[in-house]
Picture (cartoon, rainbow over the protein chains, first blue to last red):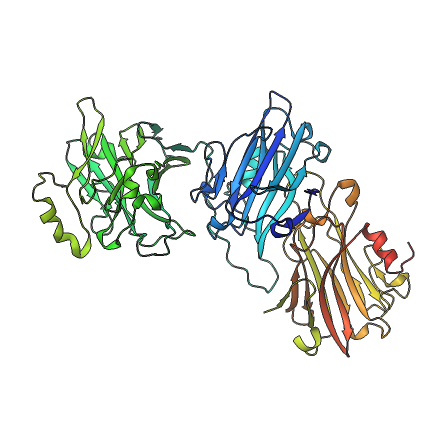
Length: 433
Length: 191
């Protein structure tokens, strides 16, 4: 086992560690009652957290690609991260493993601290943290795995007195007040900096089970967020075919009077400022592992006032007939609702259900929302259409004032196939307005 | 577009930039953005004979002796923090003025007080050395050292050397134990 000094760097290959089953084991203790949180940040080539889903921590124990997994405590180890570096999106170039202290202690108080890097068979390198190296740091970058021609390991051991907030700022998570750097005198042309990432919200909520709900209060006044943004995203399923990674985000809207409205790009895109007070921003046709496809719907926060009562919404993804055989579940569709810096994710794991084995299941319901004048209640759904059915998810208000979703709404096709819907719907009395 | 070298690579300055007279050797790095003792990195230049030694102590150009006796090599100043973009320290060389018995000018960077501050080059990011044609400001060659160092506290970044009647630049990236004093001694300076 190679001991690493602070600042030391090495390639994984020279340590004899492969890239598919890397284990990073962290043990870090400070005197009670302070506790330590361990996390992994997946950063882009500029060292920025440009995709906050790659902040893997207690509340979000895996990256969307599944290649970063926090496995929790085991024996003397406080947190084991299991990594498939080959499975990371190409945009993720650096994984920073960090510790933050919750409580009065700082890193000079470390009573026991080491990071071990290896694979399933062995521990190849160990970085021992020396309390004498630190003073008032509340957050520490422990080690980094990063790509420069190949995957490398750096024993970083540097941190911030400002704790997690300072750490996030370092990763570009909160840069609104920063002045742009003056242009460099070097004649070498540098690529333009990427767009600044949105402020990372630590209050992010992930819902994974039907029945779990989360309520987001709508804000009032001039500073209130102007939009509710709902994004559905999915990744390439790795089957070497791009053609079948095309899903459509569809939104069914239950109006206060019980009628249903339907939006989908491009034919029924909707409108933000007039009925139905929600608009679809467009169709995205190809996903890849590097760039998960995202379709976005913006909802007017005043929708309930404008429509004169509560509005129910059902968000589903649909695999078009022309896509050929694909299990929608393998694309791992999730949805995220953003309101200001509040973020709620609905991430039901469809791979767990029988429909995932059936490529004639075309529609997957990822989330339900009820919006009233005061706020939004979100709930994940695991509902899927019946095998072979083109029916859409349908909503009804229940007698108790709840929302009921069933998979028997009328079929809707887009573009040149639109006229086909009639034959599918001839025995279905339900119609969208 | 400048030539980008990796460790050990070299390029002919005379061929790449015909008519070259004065060069600026720019060195840069990023200051630490984490908390803790700041870094103070110092650039130095050694005028070396074909034996790899200085002719006298006057051939050691550093923050306390900023110009060679003949004026051909000048240290243009110390930036103690590494703050700001672009070059942090610059060494100017008048190639035609370099005495005939000087075979190469070696440029190094050391971390001041590295041992006491528990610092090393593995904690420094975005380090580079580049050679710029003073006449038109064009960058001729560049070497990004970022991954070529680790726990070293002194590093030879690069060297400008004579080869068959022309001037060449080599991306050295060689670590050195013991800081500036040890490095100077190694080149024959009386410390």
